[in-house]
Length: 211
Ligand SMILES: C[S@@+](CC[C@H](N)C(=O)[O-])C[C@H]1O[C@@H](n2cnc3c(N)ncnc32)[C@H](O)[C@@H]1O
Image (tube, rainbow, N blue to C red; front, top):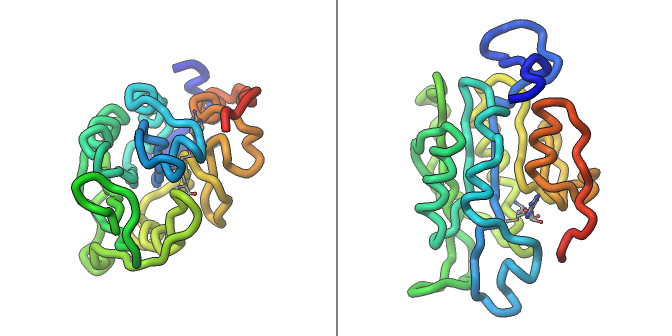
């Protein structure tokens, strides 16, 4: 890794120039096909699983960290692969239950799965354990409910360092938003944004967003 001295792990102490995040939320643009005009490909560019797995999330995250990873049904095995590639182990899942059915194969989906993965010392005190189901209404295409951020802030309250959302589309207090549709990202590719956070190089904006 280049510029390693610029980023300091909060778990190892010291005053950090750039603190390594202890909480990472990712909602990757899995390469879902189908869905016709309602399909994800008509809303934003998609990524191959191996390109997601190669992102330097493991280099960015603190040694003791939680990764919260959205997984569509088709890409559940890929999500577990990505979590491992980023240096995390799968712990458990939450389910977001929606009030009405959407797209799907074999079943019309009324739910989405959010995986909690961890690395290092990252247990959660039993008194902080919430129920595993979130009931919340749908927003825009792929938009996740605000209740999920409250859940993460509650369960991961003990993690040190900043919280980072990958593939974000909106800003949220207490979170850094990265992604080509994130506010002030200028359409930059997620890999460039991550590397710029790690080694201090400015992220190159992507010329064509491909939308
Ligand atoms: C599933 S959506 C995320 C939705 C978000 N969680 C929300 O609640 O609105 C995936 C996002 O990843 C972005 N994206 C796709 N390819 C990207 C890339 N190479 N670099 C950065 N962002 C990318 C898409 O533009 C889209 O905003």
